[in-house]
Length: 252
Image 1 (cartoon, one colour):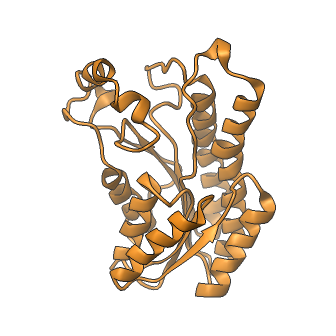
Image 2 (cartoon, helix red, strand yellow):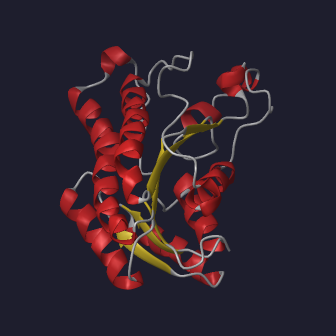
C-alpha cells in the first residue's frame, strides 16, 4: 500500500492502459478519479475499484477542453481533499498514410495527445504545489522519435508523442523545486483497442514479434506496474525520465 493516503487522477481510464493504471494505483491505496469521454465506462471502472474496497470517483472529461479539465480536477479535490498523482493517459491513434492525413486529423491528434497532457498537467500541478509533493506520469510511446525506429502511417501520432517526451523533460525541471516529479512511460506494442490495426494483422504481428526479444506483446498491466512505481516514494529520485516498456524492442 505504497500510495495510501494519496489521491490520483487517470485520464482515458475507461479501458486499456488507463483502466489498468487506475486499478493498480487503487491497489496501492490511492483514491482514484477516473476520467474519460465515456462516463458509463468510467463508472464501470470505478465499480471495479470499489469492489476491491478502493475509493473511486468517475468523471467525464474532454482533455482538449480547459474548462472540463479544470472542473474535473476541482471535483477530485472536492471529493478527496487534494490531488497528488496525475496519469496523463488519454490519447488517440489514427492509422493513416501521411499523404492522406487531413488537417482536421492532425489537429485532433495533437489536441488530444499533446494539448490534453499540457492542460491536465497544468491543472494538476497547481494543486500539487499546495502540498509540495506530486507525481505527474505522462504516457508517451516508443513511437516518439529519436529511437531509431520509424512508424509509417502514424506521422501525426509520433509527432504528438515526441512532444510529450519534450514536455516531460521541461516540466521535470520547472516543477522539481515544488516537490513534483514528472516522468513518462513509453509503451511498445500493447494489447489494447488502439493497437488492433496491428494486432489483428497476422503478418504485421509476425514481423513485429520477431523484433521483440520478450517474444510477446505487452499487456496494459505491464505498463500499469511501472506507472504505480513512478507514483510512489520509491521513485523519488527519478525525474524527467522516459521509461520504455517494450519487451526489449528498442534494444534490438
